[in-house]
Length: 296
Image (cartoon, rainbow, N blue to C red; front, top):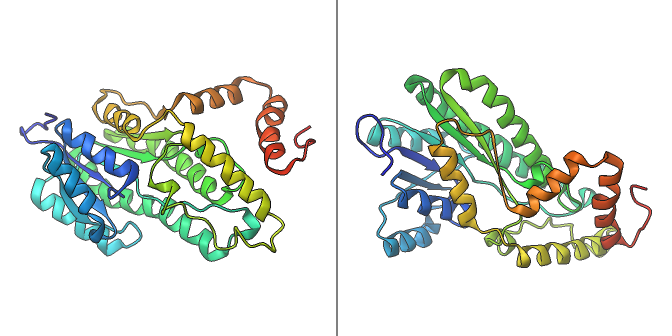
């Protein structure tokens, strides 16, 4: 059991805990002895986590927390502090997808994905910092993506939010480390979760038959689905990395999850830029559009 100096279980907040990675992270950390507060925007979606917690014999606190609503954030944190007196860690997992070629995305859709993925992450982080500074310790984790390191066609806005999360976490780590607060970025590869079903997040204009990009987008989604189905990376792999970041004496800034993602990042790091662009980005464009001279 993971305990603090007073002998109580360390309190951890997980945002976006109703499904997918957030759900698995919540269950895994609770199994390892953390006092986990599973938060979600809509409490009507808590049935799955309640059922799984009961099946595993786990006690998990479920709270309403909308990361885009400052009052909702404050209310949730006040409840946690009142019950436990501390916030050891924040797992910034809540987020949404947005799939579609850039010209087919509306400004409203782009603003929304940034509001949730970036500004929502920042808002919850800002809210927990006074408690962590007062304690002189804490862990802040941000679930980003390999899409925050390498962009992909058909997800330009989504990747932009993940690149922004990477920059935010990297900068924040330097600002907070002298205060005893550690920041880590968890960077999963493609994983099969609900994100690829009801939560896929296709833009309204992505399948518009009048769009130049509609057929390219259709083909890119077929390729993405094949990668999802063949992915060896699971939500539990992510949960294990989160646990490692929470329990390490000196946590790393970055934890990549999935050997495929690690291989691509290594290739980009060590291959000449033009060669990588031609082999990786050029091949992606060729497979989707048939155009063979990209990045030549």
